[in-house]
Length: 172
Image (cartoon, rainbow, N blue to C red):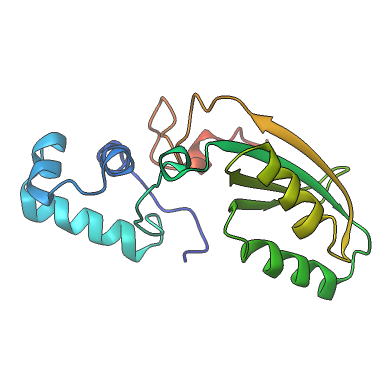
């Protein structure tokens, strides 16, 4: 994983957008779509992987297609805020098959947990038996997800400025 922002040009952003839409695209088709020779396109993708801009490639499974059509965010407040308790909670929740994502956040809640379950009975079981029963958990609040109009990992800024630093206002 890289520690600083990578310098990305508009072609890099175009490659990333295409790969996020369909990572199974052939290198030749990708090169044709961005207007590069196949070898140059391959080298750019290799560089994006090596620098950590492309952090991984995985299949995206539609939860509803595998019988888990109800999704929710569960806001969780921990009781103690000790590192060992946070680590225990995190490990336990990430091991649950219903967990899609876990976010450690600031504010009144400590974590937002994104889950996919079969139905409301399954959600209740998850909350009561798997979350609220944990000694680290002080409070849970559930928010059902009705729709996901946008689900993507990263999109380019409209100006496709090569460097994020170039978009920041100067402090002078």
